[in-house]
Amino acid sequence: MAIERTLTIIKPDAMAAGHAGDIIRLFEANHFKIVAARLVHLTKKEAEGFYAVHVDKPFFDSLTAFMSSGPALVMVLEAENVIARLREVMGATDPAKAAPGTIRKLYGSSLERNCVHGSDALQTAAFEIGYFFPGVELI
Image 1 (cartoon, rainbow, N blue to C red):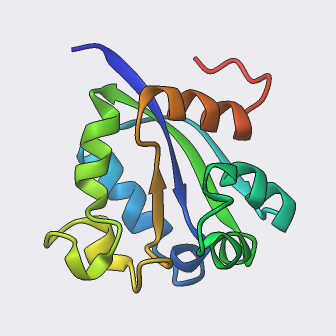
Image 2: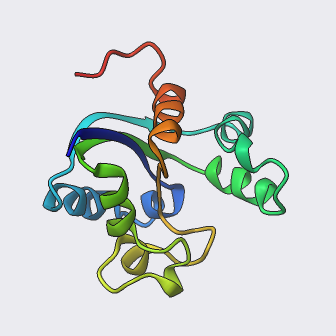
């Protein structure tokens, strides 16, 4: 398998609840290497740019308002098959449907406030990494 990179975000709800360290420990326990990290407080416009793919969906306004409501930690993770593996570790988008022991089951509270984001494909990861780390050479 090839080494991949993906973007993850520890969302404002998890940051406010003090779960960033717990989530990072789960990343490390799954052998995901953190190759970049940045603390951000998105503006509404930045959140809208990041989630532009969802602009026509009914949850767009509430999602972008939530994502701009407080600090978030964006990271680039690297590992073999990291995109699929991270999505397993995160769990279902709805914490109520997430498997026991997954990040969203442990720390998410609702479909929108589900504590963590992860890219869903290589192309998405490339866009998302570039969005948060423009011009940064990741080693």
